[in-house]
Length: 457
Image (cartoon, rainbow, N blue to C red; front, top):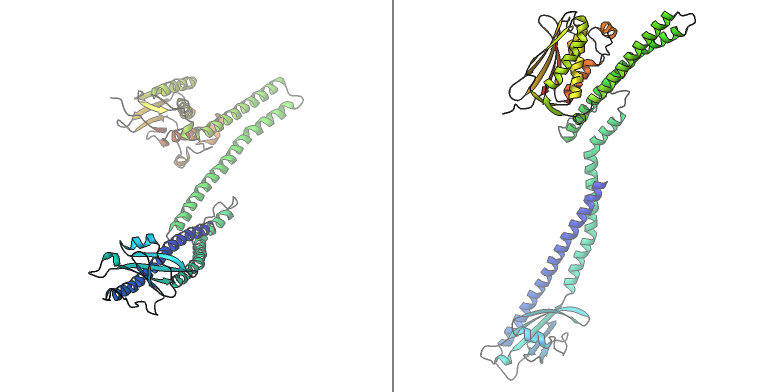
């Protein structure tokens, strides 16, 4: 409707402008045609007057067929006049002087009607210029006025009609053009959470509407994927929280039973404490993962050598692995500059090393290899362990939330199933990626790739 009103307003303005210009041109044309006819009449009278040779008695040159005509002397006296012209001069003294320099055309009111006058000078050859005559002829503008009235009436009737027709046409075209869009709107409105797999019908028109439908379907697919991940995440988080909460409740109920010995109470409280610690770790991991999923704008980036993050993480992992005889070694170019949030990268490295320590046998070696590709490009940090590696069917899902290569063992070791998911989230937030693979000789290889800064001169 707004489009139709806009078209109607614009059409009205255009019609008004065109009608004004046309009316001015039409009016000037009518007046010009009338002046041309009057010039011919004046020239005809001047020719008849110039052909008279008797200086003392001039015959009558104005015939009965003349409507408005008058012959004046150079000083303004009326020599001859038609009945409609009257006995008084049709021209003023100033207008008579102007005729001396050329023909004059003007409009006057005679007998209550507008009359168009044309005056020319008639000076026969050989005569004294002071004895020249002025021929004045005229005609009422009634025909001109009638034609102008018809044009104005046509503009007043046709202009609004054209605006209304243009508005109706625009409204009809807009409805026809937007009908597929309205249909898609209703379909999109009907798609709810109960059926996230529903899609919009794509018209077989190969135009912008079809492209819009395709774009909307792609958006709906992404929303469905996000909704599926969210529902899965909530379900998995609920499951992970329910297990320690159930154990914690059981231990507390057992501790509250009468007749429990001191040793049993101590064991129940210790077990409850372990489950509480596990709940705290799970909550912290969920919070960290939520922060890592935010945009890169949330990062506190610092340009620094990668070794400033890798070396402390390796030393801390070595201390954690020492009771089991597991050593952690680092190799590679740790002086390479990177632009990262050191806290987030340290969290990712700690998770990679914890995973390697968890699955490494006693006395094993965990290698951390830092490598850079070319003067500009990527920096990779690999953590290699000597554990059992990943099952082939698990590799594509290694970085998904609450995924475990060995669920029972990981849960028993205090794992939350979110460590590798946090690693991938941190890598992607920095513009990189995380991958998992198995070593040819046994063990797993977890890699984080990050954009690196250009090497110095």
